[in-house]
Image (cartoon, rainbow, N blue to C red):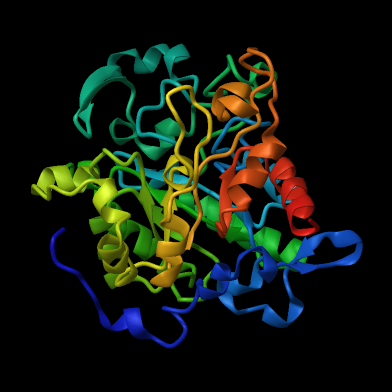
Length: 387
């Protein structure tokens, strides 16, 4: 990366301030009857400023209740009241279509292993430096992928979700955009989505560049503007810089563990780690081409050796100082995914004190959170803002 990339769109009126209202914290939430958080009607059409804070983002849909990245999971997240739905993680097909899967390897999220006609497609590839064995979307045409059906990715934690294995197909990005439009009209309120570009450097090397494809589809549907209800995110800062030249959508840089390096940094020889990016200088650079960051929760409140929460870092305040919002990831109800001091028992599918965890993270001033259980997140927000 090294140098900061800017363009004429970065300074269009309103774009730099699009997410600015989110830094108001919990006090920015407008309460309706009964204390329910809602968007201020006077703010409609003003981008993310129209959404409640802390914003509840349905992670891969309502993936705590349905197999992730299916239209059913997205629909349930909306029905539960999620402010934004992460629909979806975008990966390409062999013939260049964008589909929604958590990873390009689909053995863990589809029934591809049950299709003898695709047995020969199983292979091992190096994905961002990691040898990965399975079936990959880039080796299938869209028509072939449409013969597959989704299944629960983590059945040990969500055995009840396996009830829905085999019921839904893999959605395309265009199908999601049409679904978004249909749901917006049906509900009489704007539906927001939050797609992620997965492994952009990997796919660019294969001749399947994601950014141009995403921009083309967004322009086709007129959702490439600063106030369009589509937030774009990626773990690779240079991918967000490339998007900044192609579209005017709000952009978010995802940040993994402090000691890790974004894969595009590895490929280009940039020695910086995430720990460097969350320093004031790194955040100022991100703010030159993006409007927000999506840090792992551990960057907001680290854990000790026993897995218990410690003291919050200065990340929230430091990001807010340069005008960035924070949408950390991911809160889940099940014990294994919670800080140790919020677990109840040892059952892999048992729920812990997730409301306590929400309170701890909301108290830091984060502007929203990704959650697999939007209904829980909404109730936790209501309790938090009502004190």
